[in-house]
Image (spheres, rainbow, N blue to C red):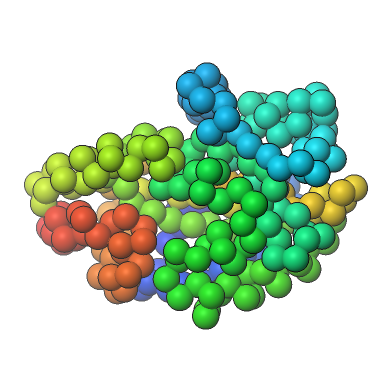
Length: 264
């Protein structure tokens, strides 16, 4: 379930924006909830299936990995693997000292239609290359936001998606499965077949190594279990979202039946 304070759509009109703000007192980078045990087991299943797919790093990232592991209370020698095994969040490390902020390490089990094989080693702007209009709108300001992070002053934002499966692991290896689920959505069953995904994302500067930690905590629930005001907001966003963005988010194949269901 998506906590009410993490519902990711602030208004019924689509808007491409960063939406990042400083984390207030009492906020934590890592959060534990009722799904902790279940999601850690899901992560373990992913790593048991193919650890080299879900957890990767580049040479030179070891110090940042150790700092991250210490931050979550894991054995520093286990690096990002040990850290990711202890928290619900997906973990990614960017190198602030290299030009372009490349992705140098990741523990990524609950990604939405991407994987480390596709992104590891790429600079920040290239990672987001598939996002429509990213480079001409929020891309440069997002990069500056990361470059200006200060130790002990993390920021957080919310991201959204709608999927035709409630499966947490929707990394790229599940693309064919996702297409099959998309084809099953109709105007009659969309409320139960479609799942709202909310991502609570945080960015923080690791004080010792100067690397940047990016965390993603994913929440899901069926569209039919959203409150009616939330459903109305979602409908407005889908109606005003440009087609290229709906395609990028993977919503386009079932956007019409979902909007029909929401309009009832």
